[in-house]
Length: 187
Figure (tube, rainbow, N blue to C red):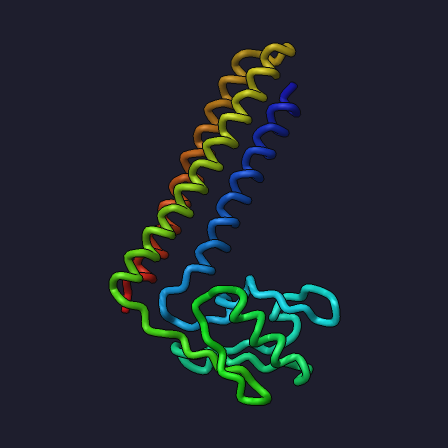
């Protein structure tokens, strides 16, 4: 019966790790005014009939904190890349220079920074909700195991371990949010 408890624990831990990974990806999309190639991660371009991430069609670099350079490997798609960046609604305006796209990243105002912190807080809270939902499902599984004959002590230990996992991952989310908030508010 211990194998079933271990399986529930491992499955719970994996789910919580995925929630934190998702949060990290969402935080990468929240830009704090510093140009990074990650800002274009969600952008896809129709490359010969296939929706392809921009990073697989061009070299994306940041020569300084205020601009991004997109240099396509196939110069004929520069217009498609420009359109994809505009259509992605990132608030970025690429300048087509023939062989490269130059994107100037605007300076973020204090008001906008506060909005970004609120957005990051919402994402962090969504991750905490996901973690709590995973905990609830795991505790339900633990109760099923008890009904199926797993010793009460083993189920109680499993529930305690699940709560410890929940606390650890919630703390991890809080630390990620604090770091992101500091990053956003730093000028």
